[in-house]
Image 1 (cartoon, rainbow, N blue to C red):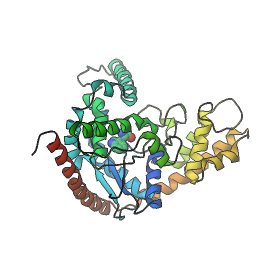
Image 2 (cartoon, helix red, strand yellow):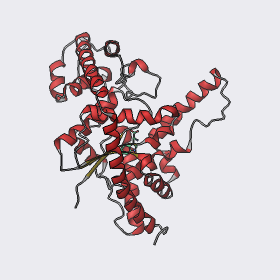
Image 3 (tube, rainbow, N blue to C red):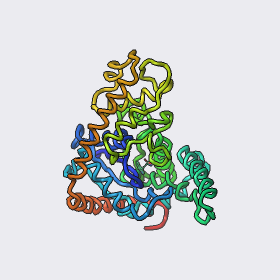
Image 4 (cartoon, rainbow, N blue to C red):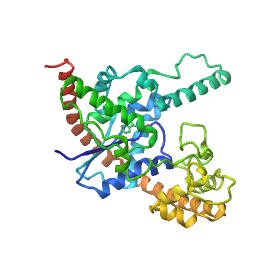
Length: 359
Ligand code: TRP
C-alpha cells in the first residue's frame, strides 16, 4: 500500500481566528513534523465552500492566499515532498465528483446535518434582521442549495485522494461519517474498491490523540465554539487583532461563579476554555497545565496568564506572517495543483467508468 493520506481543509471565507489556529492548523503542522515520511499530508483551501454562506467576493482570492500564508507562518514545511497544498477550485474534479456523489446521497441524510441546521437557523435570523433594518427585498436567497450540498462536496474532497485521516473539529463529525458512508455505499453498489473509506470517527479521534477535537470556545459565550460568522467580535480573537486589545478580550472573558478553577467543559466552559488555550499556546499537555491551576480561586490570575500568552503569541505570529514570501508560496501552489489534478482526475475517471459515463 502507498503512504496513507492525511487530509485537511480550512475554509478561507474569512480571516483565521485563534480557534482555527489552535484547533485546526497547529495539529496538522505538528503531525507533519512528527510523522514526516510516514503520511502524505494534503492541506487544501476549500475555496468553493467559501460562499455557502454570504461573503465579500471581492476579497476571496486574496483571503485564500493570506490564509495559506498563516499555514506557512505556523511552521508548515512547504518543501516537504510528502506535503501538498492546493486550492479546491483549481482541481475541477472536486466539483465533478460532488455532482455524481450527490445522486447517491439522501435528501433526508443531508437534512439531518447539524451544521446545516445551525447555519440555516442563524441565516434565517440574519435575513429577518436585514429585512427590518435595510428594507431587504428578499431578492437574494439566504439559505442556498450550496449550503445544503456542502457535505457532499466535502466528501468529494476526501474521497478523491483516498484520505484515511481527516483531522477536523467535532463539528465536522457528521460530515466525515457521510464521506465514509458514501465510500462504502458506492463500493457496494459498483462492487469495486472505488474508494478507500476514511476511518470511523473514533479512529479519527485516536489519530488526533485527543478525547474530542480541540475546540476553542467563544470568550463571551463559552458554550459555543469560537467563530467568525457569529456576531461576537469580543468573544473571538482574530490572528490580526492588535495584541494588546486581544489581551483585554481575554481579561473580559465570561467565566462562572463557582470561584474555583477546574477543568470541566460541561460545568465550567469559560474557565476550561481558558485552561485549554493556555495548554495549546504553551504546547504543554492539558493535564499538566490544568493540574497547575485546579483548586485555585483567582480567576483573575488565570486570565492574566492567558492574556499574556495570547499577546505574546499574536506578536510572534504576526511577524512571521508578514515574513512569508508570496511568490514562493504561489509557485508551490501551482506545482502541487498540477500534481493533485493528476491524482484527482484518475480517481474521477474510475468513478465515471463505474457509473457508466466512460468506457
Ligand atoms: N467543512 C470544513 C469546515 O467547515 C472545511 C472542509 C471542506 C474540509 N472540505 C473539507 C475539512 C475536507 C476537511 C476535509 O471546517
